[in-house]
Length: 283
Image (cartoon, rainbow, N blue to C red):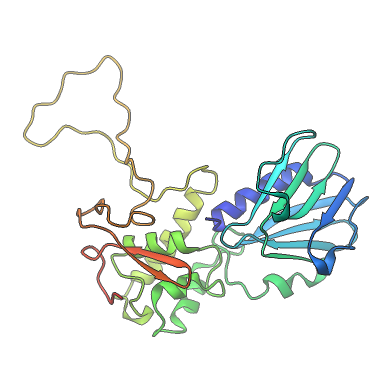
């Protein structure tokens, strides 16, 4: 699911393939911009802003896209088969002499003046992976509506930009509260730590191909048993097999206490939580 870390990786791939190169072909397959032609223009850079992508093009233009739930950009070499989905799902094609970037299932795709990017992203709160990250401002915005459920507030990009449904569930588990607990009900000092944890998790996953939030631990002998003889080679780290604590693990045992994980479907955003480890209201 595209969240701030995934979008940052997508921006890096697009920037490496497009920036500094002249577009030899550009096709925007949305009615409003179908006649817009970016061919002959140089792509200046591709930047992530929260969960938004900004592809800046010579001439003061920016192609703004958003992946939402299942959108994707794929980069192909000349002659390589496009494998991101059927042709009717393609919304954008950007081609230069070395690469073709294809946007699939993009629910948001618009061409605007670079000077007016604020119309698309000006509402966003501090970006968890951006140079404007400001944890104090994020805390202030989250506390501005103390009666709002924590999960809902974390997903509101006006508070802090980059958190999606996966991180919402994982952060609430790590904070030991349910996503339905009002923001103002958090004990003193918990919210700043939660915001700092959100930044650490996204930053730790910014270059990982597979997102993980679970704790890694070194292999140790069990208490009360003699230490094994030194092996010929060092034992590898003991790695938690599950990359996530609760998300996508309904009915499976909690990695902390063993209680079956529960799931609630809310407006196409499933919420996962442990009813034993997490305190607060539940549906």
